[in-house]
Length: 436
Ligand code: GUN
Ligand code: ZN
Image 1: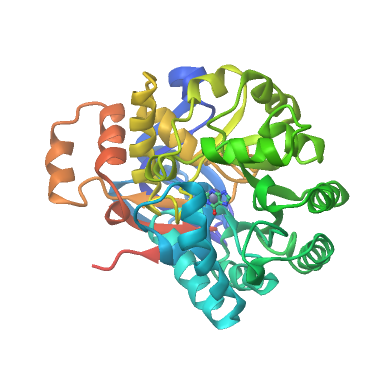
Image 2: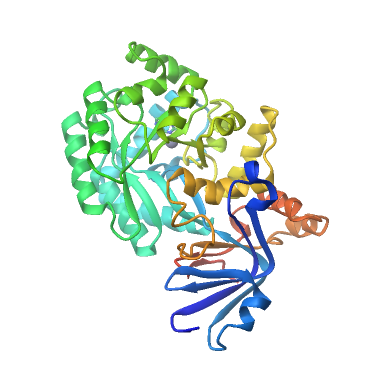
């Protein structure tokens, strides 16, 4: 074996080959003492440490993470970087929350220096929480997208983002026009889409804040450029659903509004999807449109309870999103914790394996990135998180009583948070390490 450019990490390793909800134990690959071999930022091989070390040249550097759990980097399929500073804002449901907190916070992104400072903090916070890929909203300002992409590029993170398109029902200072939204998005696509690990998402905020003209142009943009993403919100809050029905009386449902404007399809991702019916779900399944399930946000804004079992029965692609700043944590572990509780209220059971699949390979699949990230199959990009199962006194104590892998994973997702993340590696290299 040619050892040049090879390095390895050793520790307990867990990743998924498929969805444990449908494939059971066969979906899970676990090495109690494993080795992840990396070449040029990509996975060369994964397997039992004893076996791989026996045939590895002696000069290959091995980072020792024994006692810790190595997993693919987390994939956050819905988050707003410009809402970092309004996380934990009290007292409102969606529409009032947008007016009172969100729009004023997003207005500050007219200032590129502010955007740059928040983007730097945001990317670091993602990495501190083990998140290496995100689909993120910027604001209506084109320069806010530049700031986020520049910060992500520096860290070589996988970032998908786009300029918010919003030409009605919002303050003047956040309003674009159908034409300017189209032209500015197009210029950003040319500047950023496909550069290093960055990809562009056409971003109509939601049907209520775009005129039919803007919705038409957003759909056109998405169709014109191969490989583009589209991100938006749908069926989050009952007041919002009623409002959209008034604005688009010809549409069969809220989702149908997006459908009419050509906004469903591969790499199109809708946050929330709580108040859908089966006709909507079938349409999403048929078009390959994905859902981002955002449990902390749905509880925080009192929006409702997402029906994961139904989405799965109907074969939909589902990822998980923090939806910061309506979401209350950057931590995927805490987001899984609340996903479990949302599903309890629906009398549905989220297994720990299924939860961690959602945060890794499931998220990658929902973004059509599972050929590049999401697990440790050879050739994948070597983004991974190193979790410390005994990071806090309570975790250490509770872990002692945990017998099975499943139990340990469940304890991690219920009690873990940013303190549980010992290190995050991007393309094989440490991008964040917990001090001490
Ligand atoms: N719907 C439209 N805009 C937003 C937003 O910023 N956050 C959430 N949670 N829902 C939205
Ligand atoms: Zn959102």
